[in-house]
Image 1 (tube, rainbow, N blue to C red):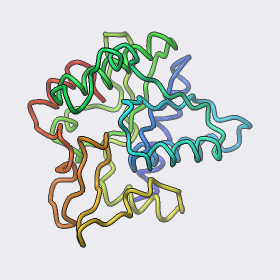
Image 2: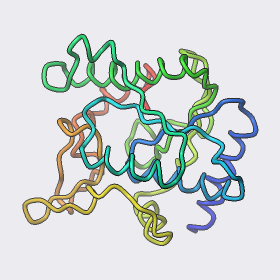
Image 3: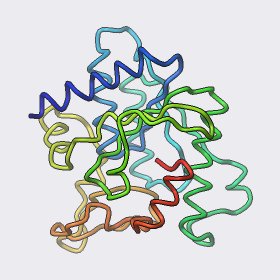
Length: 230
């Protein structure tokens, strides 16, 4: 099953590369986007240079461990790595402490992504979201056209499960964000990683993968998705 999942994701990634002139892979330093990036790297392993730019939409509030992990492996994997911020929003004082979660996330992630697409003229954006990760994401398709700005959103990892992601990373000995191995207060772990002010560790027995994320609420995610959130 794992091999068929990898083959399907690889096919979608290669299809995106063939169909679009300037696609980009979004990498947030989490398990899902790292798996997508690894499948892509293996798919193009014979090339001298990895054929995609790789971009972090940097809110300025990622975990220290996330920044260190991404910088280290961006160099080791020889990636064309872009860290993009909505500098105007940050200068206005938008932040997770004084701005409500929806407005902050919209400005620092959704609007930042739109700005990056326009600046670099990306015509396709590959994102490592999964159907079982959240109810709203269950509405996504592998290729999804977006109008503002115009581009194709590509989701190569939709039908993977959380367990299959971890099986793949460990089977292939892929370096992943060390936050996932951190245990707090005896049994609390990070199952989903976002900005540090809005992410907390949860019980190992927690049913919801994203229960430690401030923006897990269905209605907020639905509204953000409509605006172009990842």
